[in-house]
Length: 84
Image (cartoon, rainbow, N blue to C red; front, side, top):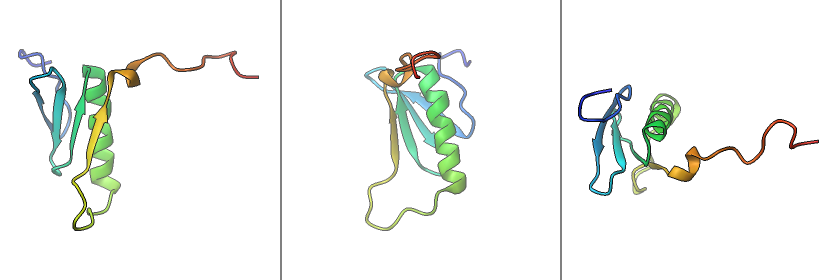
């Protein structure tokens, strides 16, 4: 991890916002924010998938932006044995 405490996310520029969230800008121009380093790595992967497989954005639509909240990093809602 770089010395300024920002994760190294493939194909993305990562900066820290004033509120502490991590802001990612993919080489394609799509953006995302995450509350944790783990979230930044995961949402960075999603941005790469969108860039590779997503079509061009239709004219007049807001730019694609993904938000990964701290709640996404919580424990799963069920574990082995919870389901019949």
